[in-house]
Image 1 (cartoon, helix red, strand yellow):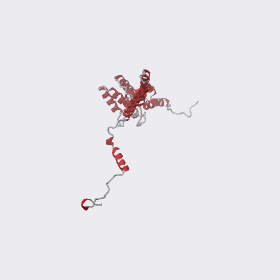
Image 2 (image 1 turned 90 degrees about the horizontal axis):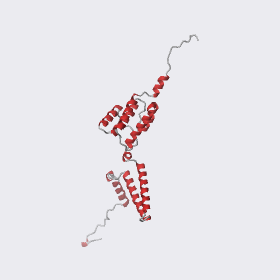
Image 3 (image 1 turned 135 degrees about the vertical axis):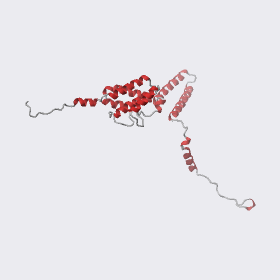
Image 4 (image 1 turned 30 degrees about the horizontal axis):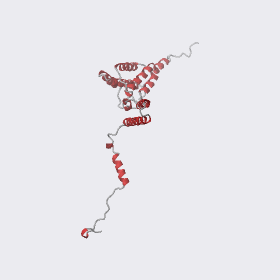
Length: 233
């Protein structure tokens, strides 16, 4: 084929990208982390779905009972019930954002270090942090005395139950301390001075307590004495 003046016209086809390859390239590009930095969290998505469901519910109710007060009351009751179930499932924001209930920090600290940190928090009026570190001091002290085997991931409830085997006289107080730790760490409860004082006293009492197994073994040991095979009966 020739153009004006008899010069040949290039018939090279235009460069095209296959559709599948283009889609795959776009997917790879969009999967990079920088495109998802501002994505909503799981809780945000759940709350958005919940409110969308509420909006649909209101729309359905208004269509089914136009102008009806009873229908609106039923919808409100259903919303309250759904909100309660959602709160029970996700928990408070503090509990939902917290870890799975582990007690000690990943970084190894001694019982003395935990106690120092707890007293510093108490002096500053940070009672929640003071209670947390005092409970950690108590459990770390039991591990240092070999009354508990060092075990990563142990929860406060597990530590209290295991420590009760060698310290049965303090079993109830240990369970109470574990519940307080869980409440202020994962349940959204705010600690106060009275909580910290009780936990501090328990920590000091348990530190001085003799384990029941050692006491029983000492009491069961027979008195040694010389034997007299030739003694008269």
